[in-house]
Length: 327
Image (tube, rainbow, N blue to C red):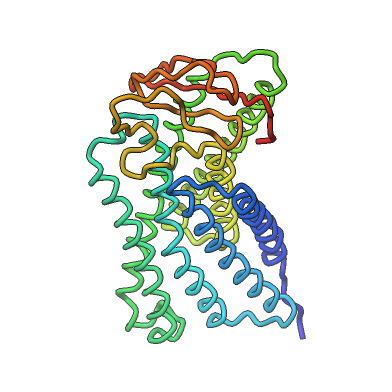
């Protein structure tokens, strides 16, 4: 009896364990922070959903390696379960990217229907994957060449061709957000608190760059898969998704003001005047309402104003609390 080559599964095991660590760590930070911003409940939701898919895939790898059960049926059942949870999680990821971008970029507030159309298309795409997997299991006898499944082959090609579009939307939204955020920063002072914030921002820039690189790599791989048969990308794709969720959660936690209002973003302001800024839970960047002046000192710390260079005319303030706490 010849032994099966499990190299791909061992690589997948490493990727999935790393992914599980990232999402578990991000979820733990959410629980510890207990931020009350209105849309922050979405972060634990997407982390919990992604953790379920990771555990499901890890279980599949364990069964495959230990019991050498490489049946297509077991593989497709695992994939179908994951697709169900992706149907819930991935549209939320796009929505959070939209919220972050529109909070700093005026143009992203125009034509909201266009953005929601992207979200609906993403839901439809993942739903087609989920339904297609069920049909493949029940009616195709796990053979795409089965005449009864010709329509599935066409659907798969269309689905794979559209798959890069949501990733491109995410990349554009996040790139705009980070460019405006970092352009708005000026050189900080020499205090320990300010240096800590800048260190956090540099780390954020590195993680963001890695995230975009992984997403771009998966886009190219998915496109290649349309024209040429390539090794499975499922494990790498799951790690890429987990890293994106980690990136959004890890640094979304340090920008809670962005998610206080889902419809107007952090810039929405309905009252006639406001003299004190929102109270942060930790020293951080707060993107404030355009054209509004805040008092220099609210009693909890000093406020240092930095003019934004973007066309939205926003103020970005750095709050340094006297009782400095870790970001």
